[in-house]
Every structure is written in structure tokens, then in C-alpha cells.
Length: 164
Image 1 (cartoon, rainbow, N blue to C red):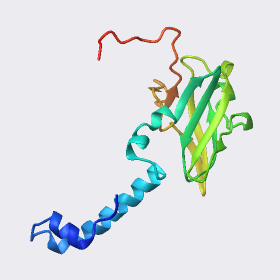
Image 2 (image 1 turned 90 degrees about the vertical axis):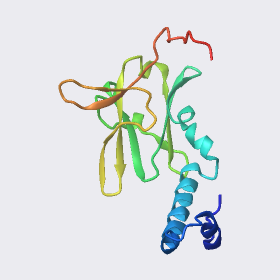
Image 3 (image 1 turned 90 degrees about the horizontal axis):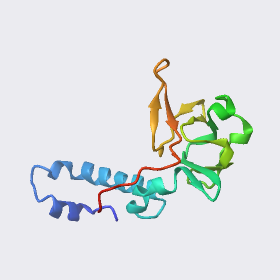
Image 4 (image 1 turned 60 degrees about the vertical axis):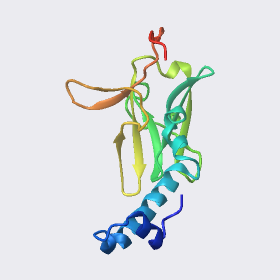
């Protein structure tokens, strides 16, 4: 998708009341295209919308694989009871590329159904705990009111009974 030219926008918005705003509309459209390109890394917007299939926590081939998109992060750690809620080196995510994709592969024994976890992110000028963007389940602690992602991998997963 290419930014629209002034003439194309003039035709598209064939409305004299919008004429004074065509430059603003064109700039906003160009900015939207730039953001789309950044998000999709030259893939389709449909691929981006299916990001949950790549990002987040997944159990595959006897391992937990966790991926996150954090382009401005300098370091990311998975924290939870398994790390005493501290950012420890064994739970540091590895940056995969300049696009901002991060990943960690963990043995199956590291996490189990119901475990809580968060991300500890370091960025230029700061650091803090975050909930993963592609988490599938989030719960709130009744006492602290803190939210955490929760591993959801029941022994017997729910099976849909309604046919598509």
C-alpha cells in the first residue's frame, strides 16, 4: 500500500469541506503506512494479526518457547516463581533480530499449568515489570492487585462441542 497522492485523495474525498485538510490527511495516511510497515516487517497485516501463533508462550517438542516483540528493549527476562521473581541470567531472552523479536527456550520442567509469570524489561533510561503482549491468560492477585500472565496448559484441554 502506497501513500495516496494529493490528486488521488482529492478524488477520493470529493468533498470541498475536506480540501483544506488534504495535506493533514495525506500526512496521517503516510504515517499509518509507516507504522504498518514497522509492525509487519514487510509481511502482510494478516501475518501480523496471526502473531499469537508465533509470539507468546508455546509448548512444542518437549520445551517451552516464549517470544516477545519489544523493539526498544535492551534486555528482557522471564520472571516468576521459577526465578524467585528476579531477573536471572538463565531466564534472559535472546534478541533474534533488529526488528525487536526476542526468544527463550526452556525445559518442560521449568513451567507448569497455573504458574504465574511476567517480563522484566530493561530499556534506555529505565526498567520494569510488564505483562507479555501475547499472553493468553492474565490473572490478578487479590492482595497486591498485580496482574500476571498465567501458564494455561491443562492436562485435559477443553474441547469445543459445537461444529464450525
